[in-house]
Each structure stands twice: as structure tokens, then as C-alpha cells.
Amino acid sequence: MLKKLTTSLVLLFSICFMANDLNAQQFVYKPINPAFGGDTFNYQWLVQSAELQNKFTDPAEAQSANDTSTLDSFAAGINSQILSQLSRSLLDLQFDTSTGLSPGVFSFGSLEVEILESLEGLVVNILDTTTGDQTQVIVPNQ
Image 1 (cartoon, rainbow, N blue to C red):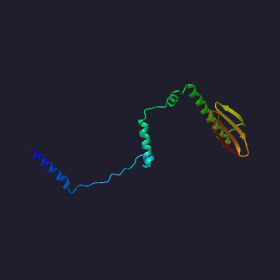
Image 2: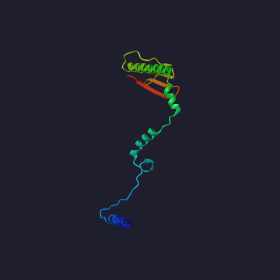
Image 3: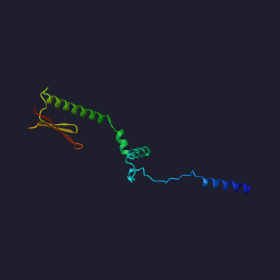
Image 4: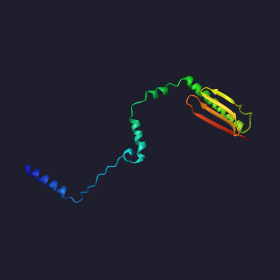
């Protein structure tokens, strides 16, 4: 039994070592992460897979998404309508279909609108008092 086993093992090893069709290749390490030299096109895929695996949520973000009250929605709707009316008035003034806007300073919730006449035309400055963001619209003279 031992002689048969030894013979079969010798035969097996000789076949493996004598085969001419054995090929080898060199292993090359290529990083995937762009931070470590990988392809930059992998970045978005890595970020998405990390976000999908992330089981933690920001408590402030989850709370702010669910805390939109009816009063806040109403205030946002009023602000939107006021800005829409203002833009309609500016367009009417541009195409001379109405009397236009009168100069002055107006407050609409958290927005402060200043309308004044200048050499360039009618200047409308809009300031959001909560964030400090500012926009200026100039309607040129005709």
C-alpha cells in the first residue's frame, strides 16, 4: 500500500514539474482609492458605497427635516408670493405696462427690500436679514 502511494505521488509530482504548459505571471498591486494613487473615476463609487454602509444619522439633520411646522410653511409661502409679486412688478416696469414701483424701503418678514432711482435706472436691493444674503436688481432706463 505504501509503495502504491509513493509511486502515485512521484508520478503526480513528475507530471506537475515536467509539464511544458505551465505559465506564471507577475502580480501587480494597483490601488483603487484615488487618495492613494488610484483612478479618479473611482471616487464617486467609493463615496456612494460608504454612504450606503453608513448606519449613523445626524440627529440635528433628522430633527430639522421633521420639524417643518405649518406656520413655517405658511411663512415660506407668503415670502414666495411677495417675491413673485415683486418680480412681476419689475417686469411690468421694464415693459412699461403699469405705473411701476415707488421708491422706498419695505420689510417682508425676514426680507428687506429697498427701491431707489439712480442714473442707471431703478435699483432694487433685497436683503435677507436672517442670513445676510444680498441681491441687487437693476432695471435700466429706457
